[in-house]
Amino acid sequence: MTATEASLRVLQFTDPHLTGSPDMRVRGVATAATLARCVAHAKRRHPQPDAVLLTGDLVHDDPLGYAALRERFADAGAPVHCLPGNHDDPAGLAGNLAGAPFAHDFARRHGAWLFVMLDSTVAGEHGGHLGVEQLAQLDAALAAQPDAFALVCLHHHPVPHGSAWLDALMLDNARELFAVLARHPGVRGLAWGHTHQPFEGMHGHIRLMGTPSTCMQFAQNADEFEVDDRPPAYRWLELGAHSGIETGIEWVDEHA
Image 1 (cartoon, rainbow, N blue to C red):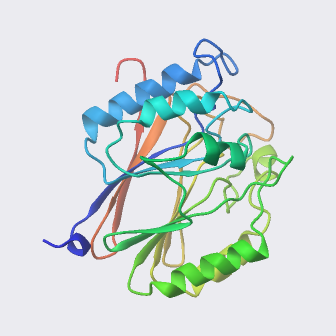
Image 2: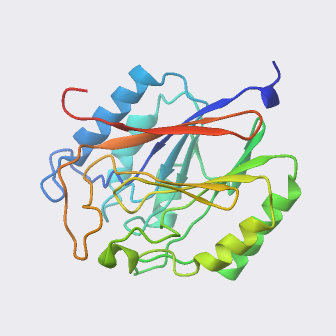
């Protein structure tokens, strides 16, 4: 079986909100410990992934947290694709997570699939936006590899989730993003973090996937900010050699 004929196993971890101290808590959650639990669970259930996705809010406004993230994924054994969230500093993320296994390519081919990592952050804002230049770069990257199936990732959710406070902080120009994606039939998946809750849907031929946080979850369908009691989580994806996507969320309680 050739590389383009094999399926890919991919793991997505998002919104760990790490700090410079493993003992520091974010809203009462020991975020370093919950990430460690999710990664350990993934190593048992989904060993030897072909790629790992880290989709933003890797630290909680504290660049010292990147050292803990580097240590946690140092032995990933696969490329660890990173993109920033609204609690990250994009330059600080790239500088602190330089070198293997961490990857900061805008687009990288894995077998039959092209992974595209977008930066939807806006300095000083919690909501997201994709500039004209980045949308053009996305369009060009997809056009350059028309034989590839594409998984596009970003931090901010491009579709409403039904929570008024959270949807005020979504990607503010999702229409422009979907207009670019619609021009490329090879795009099969769009994945994000930010919302601290699961989401599944379709937009034309594109599977939509929102992934819960490795630390705490936000209550669904809540008009105001509210944390619920669901455990930490991550997502696995099986990207088929012929465009199919199988995926699921692993909820990792203290006994998992």
